[in-house]
Length: 128
Image (tube, rainbow, N blue to C red; front, side, top):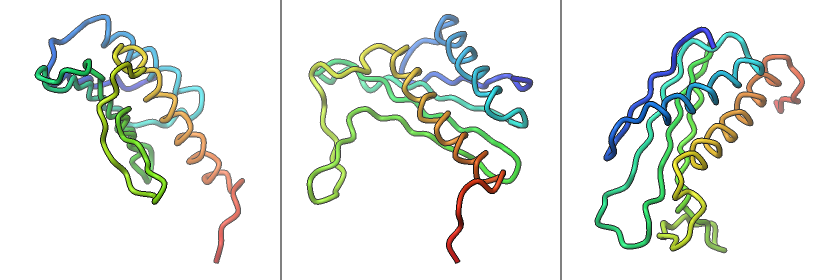
């Protein structure tokens, strides 16, 4: 990626290894779309007074020409049968490792970026 990633850490100490992993994942986005203008990543650990582990929250903001793509990856957000969203604390959730949370957040961003590129290439039908 031509533009360096701005990585921000909240409620946790800054880590060179985590920032390097974020940069690696952001560099992979370059093969899907080369005209990315900026990338900001926020890695957040929740407050330490929770008893049910420390799931990490990832927010990725990617600017491309004409649009800003945003992924907010919160593993505790669950959908009920009625279609409403509720937060729950998972006892053994998959995102207690920061690297897994980063991987899943960038996976969602890759999907959004691929959909954006398909729209640019007019490979998606538009409804009038």
